[in-house]
Each structure stands twice: as structure tokens, then as C-alpha cells.
Length: 439
Ligand code: S3P
Image (cartoon, rainbow, N blue to C red; front, side, top):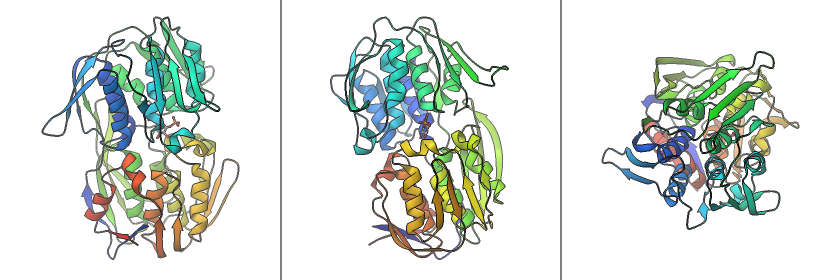
């Protein structure tokens, strides 16, 4: 069991781990670009390393330099070779879904597996559109769960696909398939999601357009396939989803002021920050700039008395990974916070709607969940409990942070999964003089 404690306000300026979404994509795009690319600031988490190992198994060579950056020998679009072993994707839904898209338009067979959490997550959402491109599902566990073996098509067809769920992973999987398909692959997004894939492909010289259809308000992303991608110098900014834990820690711990440097401010990622500001948080952005096609800023958060608000469903895609830590912030706010549009939380690394609700209830917080809502009423957090994390890194980190302000310790049963997304989490806590206790 692990729990946190602190005797002083949290103060400091931190440089944190690289963004997970951009890291997966940097590994994949550098691998299929033509020529030699470099990646700076790559997140060396278990999830990203699983994607890198999978790309290595398909022929890409990544070499780490003395300064920690990577040099990548890209094999070109259509240059990948059939992996000789099953690709074990560990815990990473992003990695496996993006790679299923990538291999769907390659004329070879690929087998994927993962850990218990990943094997319980739905893959039909990518396999359905990819089958329309010509992908064949050779075998899978029940209901398109891992382990799965798929065969890419030798004559893949471009598709036009309207996303039935707001998912950047599904959008990106289809676009990755489209890179090696002659003709134009089109994805229609009724609700916008993070657009790292589109931005990076634009930077690599792909023929890609993203426009809002004035009649429907939907985003229409069209990619011309069978075009080479240029090599590039990728720079990965800090992860706003990881920063969220430290920002909320500062907001709820009296007297604190913490700055996180170089955070990715992509509109599809900043919903939590908008929400916290609406709740009365003192959060400021400095040094705003654009780097490698993404907006970046340093974020400063100071202790604030928060108040409850309604968080609209439309905001969910831009903060989809942040509801567990928002639940913690709402637990100390004055009044009630109602979060809407949480359906997708049920298919994350755990059923995060249940895991967040049950964790809050175990801590003695007044909370209830509906089909796709979570309602939390703030007050002192009694704590004095052990949280079941269900192999979910964000549940573990959220409740560790809640323990900073609870009356009695909040212990979490398993912190090993934190390494899947935020390997430096504990060393950064130590930089803020937070004690990490084991019992
Ligand atoms: C991600 C998209 C989101 C998010 C995940 C990373 C991505 O998933 O939850 O952590 O990098 O595209 P969905 O696309 O399933 O919403």
C-alpha cells in the first residue's frame, strides 16, 4: 500500500514527462517517414515503449543518443515488415489501436495481445472501420477483445467513415491505414477530438485537410494516401494529462504555488484547465508559444478555494482522461459539481466512472453516478481507506493526490501502473517535498 503526506505547501517549478499521445505518434510517424528523424522529449513510459518495441518488430531502428533524444531510421510508407512475434502492447489502448490502423493496409499478418486491463477493452471500434478498408480479423477473443490476429489487405480501399464515438484513437487508426491506401480516406467527426495526428501529418508533408462542414458542424478530415512522409525533428511537449495531478495538488494544498513548464495546450486537451478556472482556480499561462505545430505554455497554479459547477458533456473529449482528478478537486470544492457526458469513461484502462465513484465513496466523499454523470459534493475528505486501482494509473495517481488533504491517509493498493504513463511521478512529488509512504 502506498500513500502520500506533506507538512508544507507545495512550491516549485517542474519539468515533467512528455505527452503520451504525441509520444506514441512520434514513434509511429518517425518510423514510417522517409529518412532519418529525431525525437526530443519522448515519454519513456511503458505504454510508449510498447509501441516502440512493436515498431522495432516491424523493422524500424531507434537509437538513443547521449542527451536522451532518439535518432530514427524511417522505413517509409509501406516499408514495414511482418512482425515475427505477437506484439505485446501491455496496457496501452492508444498503442494497440493506432498500430491496428497502421498494419490494416499492409499485406501481412499481425498478432496483438496485452495485459488483463487491455484484453478487456473494446477493439471493435477500430476493427469495424478497418474491415471496411479490407482488413481481415483472423482470430480474436469474444467480442473483438485481445488477443487478436489480423491480416492487412494487399488491395486496401479508401473509406469515408463517420465516428460513432468521439475517439481520437479511432480517427487516428483510420488515418494511419489511409496513409498506405491509394485515394482519399475521409473521417467525419461529429464531435472534435484531440488533433495531434492531423497536425503531425501536416508537418510531415501529408496531403491532409481538416474542415468544419458549415451545414452539419462536423469536422471532415480528408487524407490522400500513398504519399511519402518527410523525416522531421519531433519535439514532445509536457503532458497536460500528467500535469493535471500536480496542478490539482497545488490547488487543493493550502499555501501552494507550482509551475509546470512546456505543457501542451492543444484545445483538444485543455478541458480540465477551463473547468478548474470556472471553479475558481487561480491558474495562469505564461510563455505561450508554438512548437512543432502544437501550442505550448508554462502553467502556474496557486492554492484556491474552488466551488462546484456543471461540467458540460461537450467538454468531455477535451478532458476525457481527467475526470478522476477532477473528482478529487470537486471533493474539496464548496457545493456540488456535476459532470456530464461520461459514457466513454467506462471503457478506459478500468471502468473509470465506477472506479472514481467507488474511490470517492470509500474516502467518505458524498458522490453519486448516473448512466453518464458523476455528481460530487465537496467538504472535508475523511480518508482512512484503501483504494482499489483496477490496474488504472490515473485512478492510482488521483487518489494518492486526494490523500494530501484528507483527514486520515488514503492508501492505494497498486502504484506499479503509474509507470505506464508518468514514470517520474514519484520523483516529481519528492521535488515538491511530498513524502511517499509504504505500509
Ligand atoms: C488518446 C485518445 C483518448 C485518450 C487516450 C489517448 C490518443 O482515447 O483517452 O488516453 O492519444 O489518441 P479515445 O480516443 O478512446 O477517447
